[in-house]
Amino acid sequence: MLWCGTPRLLPLYIWVFSHWNIGKRIRSRAIPYLFSIMDLTVNIGHLKLKNPVMTASGTFGYGEEYSEFVDLNRLGAVVVKGISLEPREGNPPPRICETPCGMLNTIGLQNVGLKRFLKEKLPYLRRFDTPVIVNILGNTVREYVRLSEALDNAGVDGIELNVSCPNVKKAGMIFGTDKKTLAMLVSKVRQSVKRAVLITKLSPSVSSIQEFSKIAEDSGSDAVSLINTISGMAIDIETGKPKLSNITGGLSGPAIKPIAVRMVWETYNAVKIPIIGMGGIMSAEDAIEFMLAGATAVAVGTANFANPEATVAIISGIEEYLGKKGMRGVKEIIGGLNNAQSYNNLNN
Amino acid sequence: MSRHFKAKIINNLSLNGKNGLLSMEPLEPVINPEPGQFYMIGVSNSHDPFLKRPFSFFRKTSEGIQFLYEVRGRGTMMMKGFRGGEVINILGPLGKGYPEPGGDKTPLLIAGGIGIASVFSLVEAFAKRAYVFYGARDKEGLLMLDELEGLAGELIISTDDGSMGEKGTVVDVLNDFLTSDGSTELAEVFSLLTSYLIYACGPKPMLEAVSRIALGRGIKGYISAEENMACGVGACLGCAIKVKSQTLALCYKMVCKDGPVFPIEEILW
Ligand SMILES: Cc1cc2nc3c(=O)[nH]c(=O)nc-3n(C[C@H](O)[C@H](O)[C@H](O)COP(=O)(O)OP(=O)(O)OC[C@H]3O[C@@H](n4cnc5c(N)ncnc54)[C@H](O)[C@@H]3O)c2cc1C
Ligand SMILES: Cc1cc2nc3c(=O)[nH]c(=O)nc-3n(C[C@H](O)[C@H](O)[C@H](O)COP(=O)(O)O)c2cc1C
Ligand code: FES
Image (cartoon, rainbow over all chains, first blue to last red; front, side):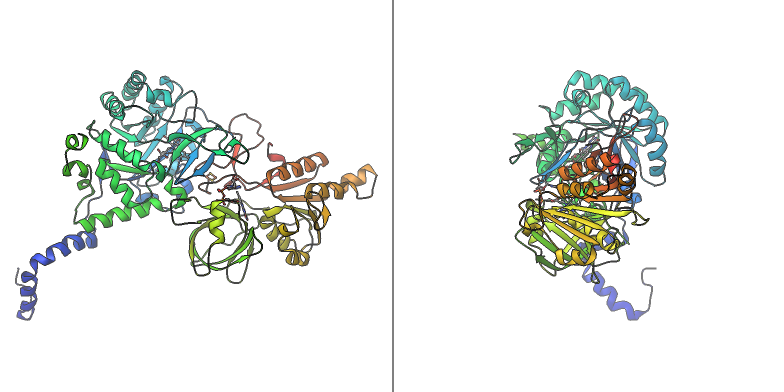
């Protein structure tokens, strides 16, 4: 019944129709915003996230540490601190220092080890309606396989292979910077992961991120995540000593953002699998920049330290942006840069 | 009640060139702090610097919370620029403070430099019962002396340059105090020493020296440690301090979460 109501409402209908076109812009912004019909969901492989904002491994503990500041149910996913088969004690202090617009860390992958993670940490995270992605690190391919098998059996939603940690000598980096080793590692792990999505976290310390992301894709990764920290160092000129115990550490925070955005964009033009973009995301604007470059989802790391509520602020900010732009879903942003101009044109 | 809150600066008193007393009023209900706990204070809204800085809970006032600080670098320099009316972001109270003062032991409170910020509320809590050993580089570095006079059982001041109180470090003074107690009878000395309980905060070398003295003489006690911090809540694992452990694995603890106050015998220097 279109003409419901009394004739007294007729002027209103006339007004509405005569202003239909002007109203269109307002409606397109206001209606999705008011009724929250905006679609924030994204897919990482077969895993559906309620929004594209997750935490970056190592910056959100095992989730519990931030649960009093953030309703974990609101997050797209929780990515926990890197887990190894056996507990690791990590590097001696000082482990961190602030640098201009960033920080260096050499935590050395201190973690509780697989057994305690499954027993003490995972059950807590299971209480939330949010996928749990476990970042893992091994010394050998076998260790990676054993870890992913155990975690897959335990029912975690995602496994993120850390092949890009700059802070541990034996492991990590070597897998991420050697093409053959990476291919072998990812395909071996692929065989043992049946349920969880498999994400390969790439090192920014390679000559071609496109080659490495392609290897990750061809070897069976469901997604790639990037970037991990970039190796750096700082010296205290008063004492003449390095500011970190390990001399070098991984740089994170706003200082690395432009590098990360560039690498996400290059990767987007090399692979078909989804990209989880990270590196210096402090605000919704930063997150959107990564998505325009081609990230399907983003991870918030160092920003949590400055503002423990950063993740939820970013989710709300993305929602506002969609409303402002009259978009119905967050997927409309992904790779937006390329929709405007083709990669080849940009690259020539 | 959230531990992440906004607070309005009431005032920011300059005590001397290097030190200030910052008073603020939380703009939402907050949790009561305990002596030895700390807060992460946001010093800027920019990206440089962007990490919050840890500061000990100094004192509660009728209006809010106070912090006593020393300018060390960029962040604390910005803090010195805080003006009344400004609103800042704060995280806290965080960590484990000094255990409840109680029992019949005689508290020996030892503060080196800005370490007084952490020890002060404990001096208050012990209500005239504590011996307070307070040392600084020079006279200017000694803060809140009038208040301390009124709160301490006995206040023993020292300066490195001798410009006020005894000349020497607070560690020297503590050593003298413990050796010159008169009695020579071994059992008596022992029972006297074990009747003390140490609480110390200050620069690392001081804490190490105090710990050695305490361990050497069988005195129990606590130190408040300092380490660079990023998150303040035990998530980044950045503020590690080496502790003794039976098994070799996991012999670091986090200053922000497990501390900043630790039993003296726990720390591995
Ligand atoms: C639990 C705790 C409680 C503290 N309480 C107080 C307090 O009540 N009053 C006060 O004045 N200071 C306190 N500090 C020290 C204070 O946090 C640092 O002085 C401050 O972070 C320096 O920041 P900045 O930007 O000025 O210095 P930066 O430019 O970052 O560094 C300058 C110098 O300070 C050192 N420094 C940096 N961060 C820390 C840190 N977290 N702890 C120790 N040294 C650091 C650096 O190594 C460097 O030598 C406390 C520290 C901790 C860990
Ligand atoms: C303190 C700290 C610990 C980290 N630990 C891990 C880790 O265990 N595994 C991993 O893959 N990445 C780790 N990272 C890297 C982050 O997940 C992220 O890739 C990087 O910090 C860039 O993002 P950001 O600038 O938003 O922090 C760590 C970073 C920081 C700052
Ligand atoms: S400061 Fe992050 S764990 Fe202590």
